[in-house]
Image 1 (cartoon, rainbow, N blue to C red):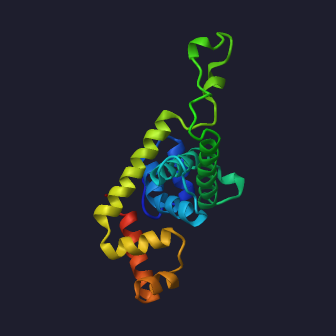
Image 2: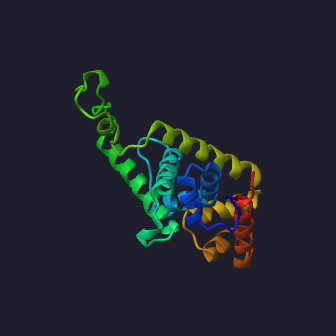
Image 3: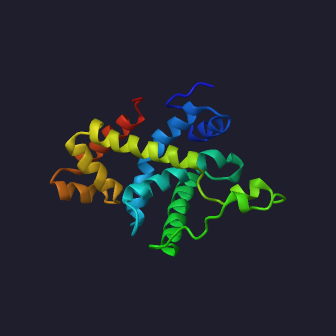
Length: 197
């Protein structure tokens, strides 16, 4: 199936679940802004890692949403993705808090695992897989590159303030521009985000 700008998020999620990397990439492109928005709107802050780590966990949540979304759940993909992103970040922060300055006490050797124990149950920990971490890190790098290379200085100023949860009128006051100018800037940012790179 062809991926276009008019393809719905719900359709893209189903395509991605049937191993369509173009559909997954399109959804990530559409929702990378949401990851930053959730982190900043909720005031999430990492006490051990960096904010980039939180962005990566946000992407892991987004990837989980793409892979597990079902239209019959009664929620739009956006609503479901928002919940998955937020839950993944909260889970990471809780885990970080419980292990603060500690070692990996939960680590164990696979050699010591019982031969009779189901290997799938060993791996099904609810934690992101190495592949998910790599994908999230890559998407995080792509977002950083996009912001630094594709946005103008004014677009970056507006983008980061909006991602922190400021309203258009608050951004307009901070930057001494009109609300209409803020809206126009954000429209340009969204247009650039939706373009193929």
